[in-house]
Length: 398
Ligand SMILES: Cc1cc2nc3c(=O)[nH]c(=O)nc-3n(C[C@H](O)[C@H](O)[C@H](O)COP(=O)(O)OP(=O)(O)OC[C@H]3O[C@@H](n4cnc5c(N)ncnc54)[C@H](O)[C@@H]3O)c2cc1C
Figure 1 (cartoon, protein in one colour):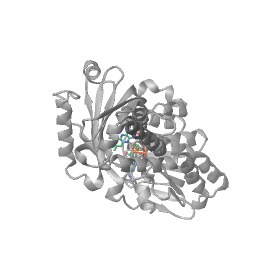
Figure 2: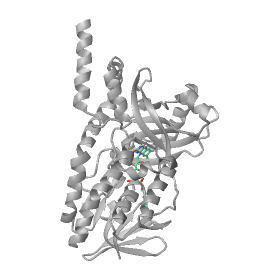
Figure 3: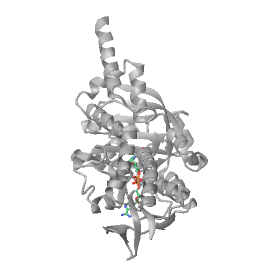
């Protein structure tokens, strides 16, 4: 029997497995796919992750595909542009997740890959996970790091399903490109682009240029996402017309995926189980970014799990401290981001862009938030205060 069975080897699952294995616990890390494997994603994250998880810096050459230094934000009718300095690392998830996975295995986590976790049974003495192929594993505790479609969240009743309004349906592709093709369009500073409310639908689109590829994606809130592939095709056509993409771009590998964008679920723990990352909805409702949150939550879970093991107590009550810790650290960020999402998908977005275009500080604040570059995340209070100030200054001048 394992101390902990971690289901899902994305950023959340591999990070928690690494720390728990390093602490000497008996861990298995289960994934339905063999590694390296791809995960549909933009692949952008704050460079601060490399300081917070220093073992990654040593492996940066294996996954870092550049640093975007400038953010370019397009208004819904694409007539107004905001621009600001940022510091966003870009990666390919195939490489990044493989490095995280290898770091976990190096520390002693036992990999069980190519098998899907199909269901879960919890008794008073252990939890048992049934895998495809007929095998099952027993552990004192299960970590559900199995992403947005989490079996663990469903089976424990922590999240039976995502209502359409709480997820964003995406389409994304890494377009292969030469260095010249990338520099010509995005400069040496790798300007990244965000498009608000494309076609007046609630959501956003993006371009993250990287070394050797240009990542193009689009996400629309589930309630409005019908016809997503044709909306994506129209977006690509527009990018080609604007010379932001090459005419002969290879888009064959475009994939669909969901991301939770309504903030975390109500509770991220139950008897003998806790959830990290997308399975618990730990994703910015503003940007759809969840890599950093999954990894940070994983680290907050580690001391709580160690205490459970020391006390041989795996009840929900003993896991409560995990939720308290991550909510204290970044729970409020989701509230601010959700509010910002509501504002940026409202009919006032165009007006707000027009006001923002007159003020460098607003442009920096918004660009940094979209690239998760600012230390404190988005502050709606500061943004509203600055917007009012800009309006007031214009009124005085008239
Ligand atoms: C189109 C798109 C673009 C995005 N862009 C960004 C971005 O630029 N920056 C950013 O920070 N975030 C981005 N995100 C969000 C980011 O991808 C997630 O927040 C992040 O991957 C969450 O990590 P995780 O470990 O919780 O889950 P995941 O990365 O989803 O990993 C879950 C793992 O569980 C495995 N799994 C699932 N079910 C089972 C099962 N039943 N049995 C066994 N294994 C299973 C999967 O194979 C996978 O390896 C994007 C998301 C999408 C959809």
